Amino acid sequence: MERPLTVLRVSLHHPMPGPDTFANVPPQLEHDTSPLLVGRGLGAHLRLQLPRLSRQHLSLEPYLEKGSARLAFNLKALSRKGCVWVNGLTLRFLEQVPLSTVNRVAFSGMQMVVHIEGGTSLEAFVCCFQLSPSPLIYRLQAEETDEWEIIPQEQPPSGSGQQARGHLGFLDSPSQPSPGGAPEIQLQREPPDSALCEPRRPPRSKP
Amino acid sequence: MSSFEDADTEETVTCLQMTVYHPGHQQNGIFQSIRFFNRQKLPSSEVVKFGRNSNTCHYTFQDKQASRVQFSLQLFKKFDSSVLSFEIKNMSKKTNLIVDNKELGYLNKMDLPHKCLVRFGDYQFLMEKEDGESLEVFEIQFSLSTRPLLQENNWLPQKPIPECGRYSSCSTQNNSPIEMGENEW
Image 1: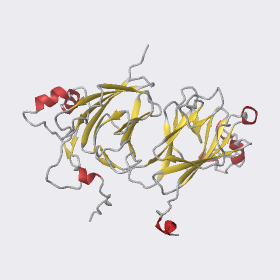
Image 2: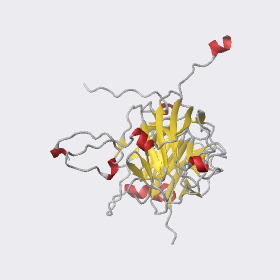
Image 3: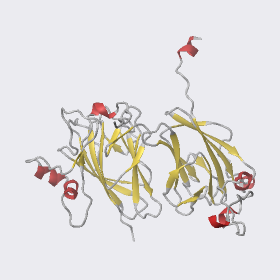
Image 4: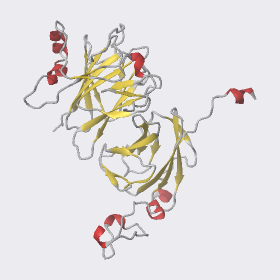
């Protein structure tokens, strides 16, 4: 009997997409246990046509935690020039972090939410892509801050909520109180693009 | 002269020194496709695969008992660290990979210690990392050992031996037991 594949539900949003930005994004993509490459180049498995995107910008690498029967994933930054913001951390070239069940990712103006639904197959995994017309990550406009703040109970803007919920049902549902104890999503503020790759400052010393 | 003066400052390159051993190499040429004593440069983002399949692996083993892809190595940086490290991942469903004393099953991975012994089946690899600055490339250099590395280098981390105790199965290769008190066991 075939084992169910791990599913990565990937939602994508770009505030100003070009006509070809998402032209090569398939609805579904099955991939083996090698790292899945995201970038602009022909060698990338998920190709996004963005001028500021590297040919290989990031990878999603499946692996097994010792003692676990389900795939876990690492996100690794592969761009020498750009950065990748993942769940509040800014990754530079060759840095990697493990992903959790729901993940907020931003790079080159692109917003991406990755929701991992574990299957038991260790042969492959499948990505299901959805394009979102609405932003996926709450973003600061004019206010400046150097710490990413967590907003406890972010509500979708009135009027657009229904559309966003319909398009990204899986994204909204976990933030609602769940009797089953599902993890609660805390929306995080995405840094402005200009701040993504600024040199890291040492942590402030407390008085 | 000017080309020397205007050239970019040379960077040191992270290098993984791999000494390999297999008892059947002399007879069967298991490592015949590997170029020894040659520092091969690879892009830093490359996932380097080792195994039997020459189409997918950078370094191949001429051995039907080896998996098509046995294990992979890749360079990475820990978050907020400037140090480049290697990560090893077992890609074989049939054979566990042993890094020093840690056993890795299929798709298990771990950071490679600075100097360690990697084993599976009759294969032994002594891996030593030379730190470098370059983020663009890294190097791998192979050496061939005609003697088992496990015994030669006494590789497994030493476990203390109780005065009246016996060697555990893991420490049979150790030649120099460390003394310890009776109550510490």
